[in-house]
Image (cartoon, rainbow, N blue to C red; front, side, top):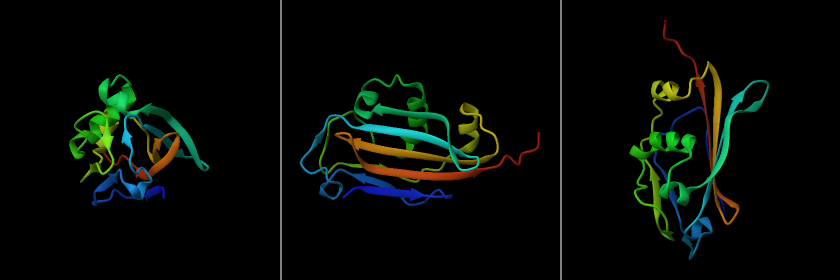
Length: 146
């Protein structure tokens, strides 16, 4: 059974918990490698790719975080997650993202974006099969007067 979480137009106050267990079809695996694919979209006559669409081997990234966009994204998540070591991750290990709230001002300081509706898709692959997919969108309007 694969898992898909859709978080549309909201940032949930509930923790996102990824548990490597039988429920995720990752039974007796010791994960030495899994990929994460991140894609950004903007709504303009339908959802269109926007700026970044990349994949990384997450275990290699944790050992040597040289991918600049992934490193910036991970800096936003790191205070809210229990990821504190590199691979391997054993079956039964939980990766938790808890109480994450996107600080739009900090985000815009690194990724200047204009007003509009944006989406992100994050997929986790084990042995080239999607095991978990998290999708979300946000309406961004800058009401600050300059």
